Length: 230
Image (cartoon, rainbow, N blue to C red; front, side, top):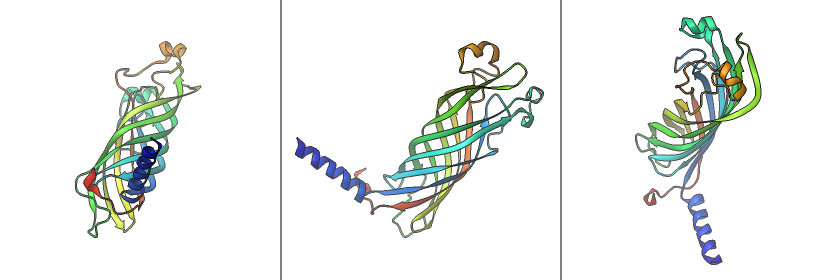
């Protein structure tokens, strides 16, 4: 049994180190929020976003991807086109750290070991989890910190375009929406039960969204892969 486990681990290690291509790099761009506070324009970055990204290229058409991004989601009713929101004049800033894992699919073959120029649009989706602070608004519009935090799970929907700018470097630009399974990020549904009845507002049937718009620069490494087995 021990011998079998040793052989299995050795085979997996060889597969990972000798037969795959990896990418490691940086993400930089901007973020904006869409919910019950502020403007509802989908692509309107108003705060910087920065993070890291890792890809495990399993074929010339798809990769497993992980990213970790930090930003501050900011929204202000004064930037809205809705007269009711402008009159209400709520605003907030909520720092988040988002981890995302999923699958990136390219429209065309993207073989990092080919001598041809590589460029292709791509789609990415998976699952996200973002840690955010909890707060609510008083009747006078004052933001009250609840001194707690929560996790917002969501679905990323990303469209991008990437191209190989050098033998080892990939540059990409992308626009990504995050649909979350929470309505707490903007304080419209207070996490604290004692504040819910008096402080909840907005459309309670719609969850929060946020957007990332930015670029990635990744460095590729690993041996020439054999894509025939996957």
